[in-house]
Image (tube, rainbow, N blue to C red; front, side, top):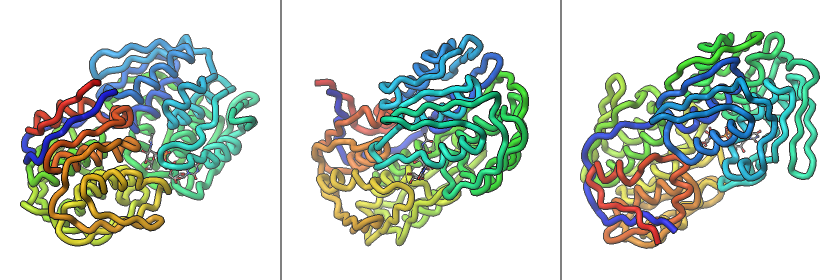
Length: 419
Ligand code: UD1
């Protein structure tokens, strides 16, 4: 078993380059399947979720090669339509392949994603949208069999919630469907824009990505293209939290500052000074952070649910009382119990978490409950006095490339230990 052993507190300072967004890379890899020729995705992070996506594409018959941060995908030989249960279980978000497989093969068979670390993971919005586009879907004993006679057809689709994954699946299915699809109440996350930009570079006709209404005029075919994945805004936010909780300073390169706008006011409210430039953000933290009165997680451009755990860790030693309302996932406070072990004072009632800032955290053994919850524990461990041991690294490795090496570069005392 591997653990991260952290000795704190250490004031972080230095520079880092942020890798490409996991949540963009996965749908982009699914989109590559739709093309008639090879695609090269640049700025692809080296993460276990990306490895799972490579295995899914290979399982479908694609040829896939990785060279450094670039992944080359040739979908021409692909003729598969099934994702094995083992891969679905390894990465519940593999549901984003459904729209692409269905559009390309006319059939898709995969297991139902079921529950995950964040609670139940319903896909009703994905399925009802695909049905509107002409798919027949049979749900049987946890297995989904989707078929389409002929070609998918465009349709008006109104989402009752702006689901990121459902919007992506609709874009993937509708890009080559016959006729016009109009999505209302679409998700507006930057990853949706990245997917639409990629598809448009391949010849798709998608307008309005980043807004609530997206119009897709289906085209007959898509070519492959070269595309650079957008930077990971949640990884950037995590390193900002790490610098802030240690009273340090950090310069991040390779970021898209506009994607950080929902989070920057929170750091400023804590007393941090931030400056942004073209693809950079600089943060300098005060000696002690101040509380933040209320943070509500919301769909973009609201405060992202994925940043809630590391920001909560940061606020655990701020002066005063901070509060979160988690509006996106019902089981997204699993890191709280672990933060309590480090000495934090946090109370959770339903969707609300109240954080009474303590003057210091103390090192302890903690376990990452999920991806971002794990990152929160690393952030807290950097500020905790003494040794913190973080286990459950398989979660953290899903979303953070070389987390310990990056933190060492910033001056942290952290190492990965195998026992
Ligand atoms: C994506 C991100 C995840 C992020 C989330 C919200 C990826 C791989 N993952 O997840 O990191 O936390 O967006 O920003 O991009 N819902 C339904 N029915 C559905 C679909 C969703 O009820 O068919 C609900 C979910 O249970 C959840 C909410 O909608 O409560 C948001 O989910 P969604 O936006 O779909 O998140 P994901 O795409 O799964």
